[in-house]
Length: 281
Image (cartoon, rainbow, N blue to C red; front, side, top):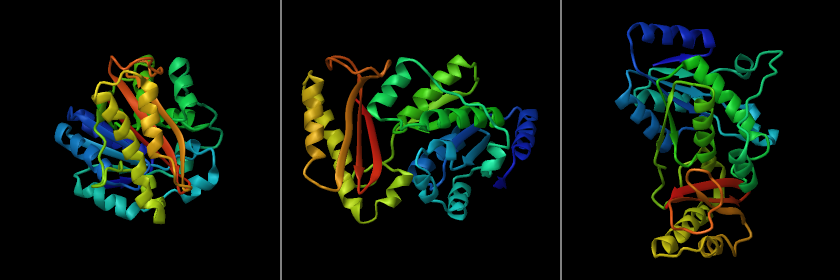
Protein backbone atom coordinates (compact mmCIF):
# COMPACT_ATOMS: atom_id res chain seq x y z
CA UNK A 1 0.00 0.00 0.00
CA UNK A 2 1.21 3.48 -0.88
CA UNK A 3 0.49 6.54 1.26
CA UNK A 4 0.31 9.69 -0.84
CA UNK A 5 -0.10 13.33 0.19
CA UNK A 6 -0.68 15.20 -3.04
CA UNK A 7 -3.30 15.35 -5.77
CA UNK A 8 -0.55 14.93 -8.36
CA UNK A 9 0.49 11.60 -6.85
CA UNK A 10 -3.09 10.31 -6.76
CA UNK A 11 -3.75 11.29 -10.36
CA UNK A 12 -0.54 9.64 -11.52
CA UNK A 13 -1.55 6.39 -9.84
CA UNK A 14 -5.07 6.59 -11.28
CA UNK A 15 -3.72 7.27 -14.77
CA UNK A 16 -1.67 4.10 -14.47
CA UNK A 17 -4.79 2.19 -13.42
CA UNK A 18 -6.66 3.69 -16.37
CA UNK A 19 -4.10 2.42 -18.87
CA UNK A 20 -4.76 -1.06 -17.51
CA UNK A 21 -8.54 -0.45 -17.69
CA UNK A 22 -8.67 -1.24 -13.98
CA UNK A 23 -11.90 -0.76 -12.02
CA UNK A 24 -11.31 1.79 -9.22
CA UNK A 25 -13.16 1.66 -5.91
CA UNK A 26 -13.08 4.60 -3.51
CA UNK A 27 -13.86 4.91 0.22
CA UNK A 28 -13.87 8.54 1.46
CA UNK A 29 -13.19 8.84 5.21
CA UNK A 30 -12.07 11.17 7.96
CA UNK A 31 -9.98 8.44 9.56
CA UNK A 32 -10.32 6.87 13.01
CA UNK A 33 -11.09 3.60 11.23
CA UNK A 34 -13.41 1.02 12.73
CA UNK A 35 -15.12 -2.15 11.54
CA UNK A 36 -17.59 -0.13 9.51
CA UNK A 37 -14.77 1.39 7.47
CA UNK A 38 -13.19 -2.04 7.13
CA UNK A 39 -16.43 -3.45 5.68
CA UNK A 40 -16.44 -0.71 3.02
CA UNK A 41 -12.79 -1.36 2.13
CA UNK A 42 -13.46 -5.09 1.97
CA UNK A 43 -16.41 -4.58 -0.36
CA UNK A 44 -14.30 -2.35 -2.60
CA UNK A 45 -11.48 -4.90 -2.59
CA UNK A 46 -13.79 -7.71 -3.64
CA UNK A 47 -15.35 -5.75 -6.51
CA UNK A 48 -12.54 -3.53 -7.81
CA UNK A 49 -9.02 -3.85 -9.21
CA UNK A 50 -7.71 -0.75 -7.43
CA UNK A 51 -8.89 0.47 -4.00
CA UNK A 52 -8.31 4.07 -2.92
CA UNK A 53 -9.12 5.34 0.58
CA UNK A 54 -8.97 8.99 1.54
CA UNK A 55 -8.03 10.02 5.07
CA UNK A 56 -8.83 13.69 5.53
CA UNK A 57 -10.39 15.38 8.55
CA UNK A 58 -12.19 18.09 6.63
CA UNK A 59 -12.16 21.42 8.52
CA UNK A 60 -15.06 22.67 6.39
CA UNK A 61 -17.35 20.09 8.00
CA UNK A 62 -16.99 21.48 11.51
CA UNK A 63 -18.90 24.60 12.53
CA UNK A 64 -17.32 24.25 15.98
CA UNK A 65 -13.55 24.34 15.51
CA UNK A 66 -12.95 22.90 18.98
CA UNK A 67 -14.72 19.74 17.78
CA UNK A 68 -12.49 19.70 14.70
CA UNK A 69 -9.33 19.91 16.80
CA UNK A 70 -10.52 17.17 19.18
CA UNK A 71 -11.58 14.79 16.39
CA UNK A 72 -9.70 11.47 16.84
CA UNK A 73 -6.60 11.08 14.65
CA UNK A 74 -4.17 8.17 14.42
CA UNK A 75 -2.80 7.87 10.90
CA UNK A 76 -0.36 5.09 11.69
CA UNK A 77 -3.12 2.89 13.12
CA UNK A 78 -5.43 3.75 10.21
CA UNK A 79 -2.72 2.92 7.66
CA UNK A 80 -2.13 -0.45 9.29
CA UNK A 81 -5.84 -1.29 9.16
CA UNK A 82 -6.16 -0.11 5.56
CA UNK A 83 -3.18 -2.20 4.49
CA UNK A 84 -4.67 -5.26 6.20
CA UNK A 85 -7.82 -4.82 4.08
CA UNK A 86 -5.82 -4.74 0.87
CA UNK A 87 -6.08 -1.03 0.11
CA UNK A 88 -3.75 0.05 -2.70
CA UNK A 89 -3.62 3.79 -2.14
CA UNK A 90 -4.19 5.82 1.03
CA UNK A 91 -4.63 9.51 0.19
CA UNK A 92 -3.86 11.54 3.31
CA UNK A 93 -3.52 15.19 2.28
CA UNK A 94 -2.91 18.23 4.44
CA UNK A 95 -5.61 20.93 4.51
CA UNK A 96 -3.52 23.22 2.29
CA UNK A 97 -3.47 20.57 -0.42
CA UNK A 98 -7.27 20.40 -0.52
CA UNK A 99 -7.88 24.10 0.18
CA UNK A 100 -4.94 26.07 -1.23
CA UNK A 101 -4.64 29.85 -0.72
CA UNK A 102 -7.39 31.62 -2.61
CA UNK A 103 -9.79 28.67 -2.55
CA UNK A 104 -13.26 30.24 -2.83
CA UNK A 105 -15.69 27.64 -4.21
CA UNK A 106 -18.41 25.83 -2.34
CA UNK A 107 -20.90 23.20 -3.47
CA UNK A 108 -24.28 22.57 -1.90
CA UNK A 109 -27.36 20.55 -2.68
CA UNK A 110 -30.45 22.75 -2.41
CA UNK A 111 -34.20 22.27 -2.36
CA UNK A 112 -36.53 20.12 -0.28
CA UNK A 113 -33.89 17.46 0.36
CA UNK A 114 -31.48 19.82 2.06
CA UNK A 115 -34.25 21.65 3.89
CA UNK A 116 -35.32 18.34 5.39
CA UNK A 117 -31.77 17.37 6.35
CA UNK A 118 -31.19 20.71 8.04
CA UNK A 119 -34.56 20.75 9.75
CA UNK A 120 -34.10 17.35 11.28
CA UNK A 121 -30.60 18.11 12.46
CA UNK A 122 -29.14 15.29 10.37
CA UNK A 123 -26.67 17.86 9.07
CA UNK A 124 -25.35 20.53 11.41
CA UNK A 125 -24.83 24.13 10.33
CA UNK A 126 -22.08 24.29 7.73
CA UNK A 127 -21.46 20.55 7.57
CA UNK A 128 -23.44 19.77 4.47
CA UNK A 129 -21.78 22.30 2.15
CA UNK A 130 -18.35 21.42 3.52
CA UNK A 131 -19.01 17.73 2.96
CA UNK A 132 -20.44 18.25 -0.53
CA UNK A 133 -17.50 20.40 -1.58
CA UNK A 134 -14.81 18.02 -0.37
CA UNK A 135 -16.57 14.95 -1.79
CA UNK A 136 -16.83 16.51 -5.25
CA UNK A 137 -13.14 17.45 -5.03
CA UNK A 138 -12.23 13.90 -4.03
CA UNK A 139 -14.36 12.37 -6.78
CA UNK A 140 -12.69 14.64 -9.32
CA UNK A 141 -9.26 13.71 -7.98
CA UNK A 142 -9.77 9.94 -7.74
CA UNK A 143 -12.34 9.51 -10.54
CA UNK A 144 -13.55 6.17 -9.16
CA UNK A 145 -15.91 3.74 -10.83
CA UNK A 146 -17.63 3.06 -7.50
CA UNK A 147 -17.73 5.07 -4.25
CA UNK A 148 -18.69 3.35 -1.00
CA UNK A 149 -20.67 4.71 1.97
CA UNK A 150 -22.21 3.24 5.10
CA UNK A 151 -25.99 3.36 5.49
CA UNK A 152 -25.74 5.28 8.77
CA UNK A 153 -24.19 8.26 6.95
CA UNK A 154 -27.50 9.02 5.28
CA UNK A 155 -26.99 12.79 4.78
CA UNK A 156 -23.70 12.05 3.03
CA UNK A 157 -24.77 9.43 0.55
CA UNK A 158 -28.17 11.00 -0.17
CA UNK A 159 -26.45 14.30 -0.99
CA UNK A 160 -23.71 12.57 -2.99
CA UNK A 161 -26.26 10.60 -5.01
CA UNK A 162 -28.00 13.89 -5.83
CA UNK A 163 -24.74 15.59 -6.81
CA UNK A 164 -23.64 12.65 -8.93
CA UNK A 165 -26.93 12.83 -10.82
CA UNK A 166 -27.06 16.62 -11.18
CA UNK A 167 -23.38 17.15 -12.02
CA UNK A 168 -23.01 14.09 -14.26
CA UNK A 169 -20.40 12.50 -12.00
CA UNK A 170 -19.87 9.02 -13.46
CA UNK A 171 -19.07 7.21 -10.20
CA UNK A 172 -21.67 4.73 -8.96
CA UNK A 173 -22.67 5.17 -5.30
CA UNK A 174 -22.75 1.96 -3.26
CA UNK A 175 -24.38 2.03 0.20
CA UNK A 176 -23.66 -0.83 2.60
CA UNK A 177 -25.43 -1.82 5.85
CA UNK A 178 -24.38 -0.25 9.14
CA UNK A 179 -21.86 -2.26 11.16
CA UNK A 180 -22.58 -2.45 14.90
CA UNK A 181 -20.87 -3.34 18.15
CA UNK A 182 -22.13 -6.39 20.03
CA UNK A 183 -24.51 -4.21 22.09
CA UNK A 184 -26.04 -2.68 18.96
CA UNK A 185 -24.28 0.69 18.94
CA UNK A 186 -23.52 1.76 15.38
CA UNK A 187 -19.80 1.93 14.65
CA UNK A 188 -18.65 5.54 14.48
CA UNK A 189 -15.36 7.38 14.78
CA UNK A 190 -17.05 9.52 17.43
CA UNK A 191 -17.56 6.54 19.75
CA UNK A 192 -14.03 6.85 21.12
CA UNK A 193 -15.02 10.26 22.50
CA UNK A 194 -17.77 8.77 24.67
CA UNK A 195 -15.34 7.74 27.41
CA UNK A 196 -17.26 6.89 30.62
CA UNK A 197 -20.57 7.47 28.81
CA UNK A 198 -20.06 4.57 26.36
CA UNK A 199 -22.55 2.30 28.19
CA UNK A 200 -25.21 5.02 28.04
CA UNK A 201 -24.89 5.26 24.26
CA UNK A 202 -26.85 2.03 23.74
CA UNK A 203 -29.98 4.11 24.32
CA UNK A 204 -29.62 5.32 20.71
CA UNK A 205 -29.92 1.89 19.00
CA UNK A 206 -32.55 0.97 21.62
CA UNK A 207 -34.60 3.98 20.55
CA UNK A 208 -34.22 2.97 16.92
CA UNK A 209 -35.31 -0.59 17.67
CA UNK A 210 -38.28 0.66 19.71
CA UNK A 211 -39.59 2.59 16.73
CA UNK A 212 -38.91 -0.26 14.32
CA UNK A 213 -40.58 -2.79 16.61
CA UNK A 214 -43.91 -0.95 16.80
CA UNK A 215 -43.84 -0.41 13.03
CA UNK A 216 -43.17 -4.12 12.48
CA UNK A 217 -46.11 -4.93 14.74
CA UNK A 218 -48.41 -3.02 12.41
CA UNK A 219 -48.48 0.51 13.81
CA UNK A 220 -49.22 3.02 11.04
CA UNK A 221 -49.07 6.26 13.04
CA UNK A 222 -45.50 7.63 12.87
CA UNK A 223 -46.06 9.79 15.96
CA UNK A 224 -46.66 6.70 18.11
CA UNK A 225 -43.40 5.20 16.81
CA UNK A 226 -41.59 8.48 17.61
CA UNK A 227 -42.97 8.48 21.17
CA UNK A 228 -41.69 4.93 21.74
CA UNK A 229 -38.24 5.92 20.52
CA UNK A 230 -38.09 9.12 22.57
CA UNK A 231 -38.98 7.17 25.70
CA UNK A 232 -35.69 5.27 25.35
CA UNK A 233 -33.78 8.57 25.29
CA UNK A 234 -35.35 10.04 28.43
CA UNK A 235 -34.52 9.78 32.11
CA UNK A 236 -30.74 10.28 31.94
CA UNK A 237 -29.25 13.73 32.46
CA UNK A 238 -26.28 12.77 30.27
CA UNK A 239 -28.51 11.97 27.29
CA UNK A 240 -30.10 14.76 25.25
CA UNK A 241 -32.54 13.67 22.55
CA UNK A 242 -32.10 15.80 19.43
CA UNK A 243 -34.59 14.21 17.05
CA UNK A 244 -36.49 11.13 16.03
CA UNK A 245 -37.56 11.44 12.41
CA UNK A 246 -39.51 9.03 10.21
CA UNK A 247 -39.00 9.97 6.59
CA UNK A 248 -40.01 8.80 3.15
CA UNK A 249 -37.13 6.78 1.70
CA UNK A 250 -37.30 8.58 -1.64
CA UNK A 251 -38.04 12.22 -0.75
CA UNK A 252 -36.88 12.30 2.90
CA UNK A 253 -40.03 14.20 3.74
CA UNK A 254 -41.81 13.28 7.00
CA UNK A 255 -44.36 10.52 6.48
CA UNK A 256 -47.97 10.81 7.58
CA UNK A 257 -48.55 7.09 7.75
CA UNK A 258 -46.36 4.01 7.74
CA UNK A 259 -47.99 2.10 4.90
CA UNK A 260 -44.89 2.48 2.74
CA UNK A 261 -41.14 2.00 3.34
CA UNK A 262 -39.55 4.70 5.47
CA UNK A 263 -36.28 5.68 7.09
CA UNK A 264 -36.14 6.03 10.86
CA UNK A 265 -33.42 8.42 12.07
CA UNK A 266 -32.50 8.89 15.73
CA UNK A 267 -30.10 11.53 16.98
CA UNK A 268 -28.96 12.26 20.53
CA UNK A 269 -26.06 13.73 22.45
CA UNK A 270 -24.60 11.29 24.92
CA UNK A 271 -22.10 12.85 27.29
CA UNK A 272 -21.98 15.76 24.84
CA UNK A 273 -21.09 13.54 21.86
CA UNK A 274 -23.50 13.71 18.90
CA UNK A 275 -24.63 10.24 17.81
CA UNK A 276 -26.81 9.27 14.86
CA UNK A 277 -28.44 5.99 13.96
CA UNK A 278 -30.59 5.13 10.97
CA UNK A 279 -32.47 2.12 9.65
CA UNK A 280 -35.05 1.45 6.99
CA UNK A 281 -38.41 -0.07 7.83
